[in-house]
Length: 281
Image (tube, rainbow, N blue to C red):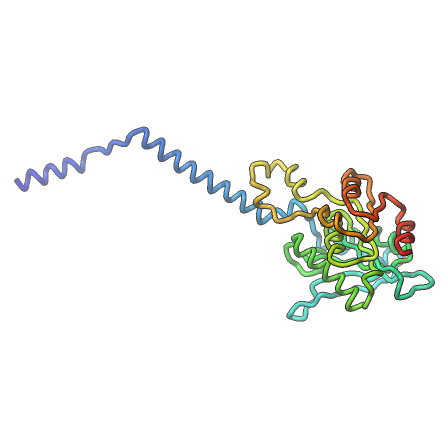
């Protein structure tokens, strides 16, 4: 009897395992679904962490300075961290007007999200020629400022630090500071103007919002952008609440759209010299 049971057990072990085709299809579908979900989740994570690269293109190179245009300037290092290390680097270009006084307007220049201060030298020279003090700086992640991954939030924090430097270190009145936002910097300038009261706000060639840029990229079409996007770069909400004089420059439709929705007083494509003269009255 014992031998017979052993023989039956051996026969059972040797018998082939029969797997139905339906089970195999279900198993394959499950594995494929899990793999697809993992791949999709990876794509979402990559976009979430790297979305700034679709909007910002920083450079650490400083290949040009105001001296190349014959301008006297000081290299400024400010916004010291807890270790005593300055986080931001910029240029102070004092006005060369014959009668410079504490009330001489100072232009705080917030540059675009590409390159570094080197790319702004031509603009800075043109603005300085209007008789202004000009202060321009690189956000962290750009130029000689601290090396981090830049985001809208860090760039706005840096813009606030530049305002604080002018008002607390140089003791300038906020009412003497003109904010100038170029490209991506337009959104930062608008948000900064909403928190403080500058003499005026200049929006030059504002960039498209982050959402518009994402929508035009074919790589993002299958992703839940509204859930993943952390960058905005949209000055619209701030512009409807700012009552400082505003000048909108640039030929793009974006410039006109922002002009129409913003609160007054506002001017569209007026010569900058005339606008500054009118806003100072």
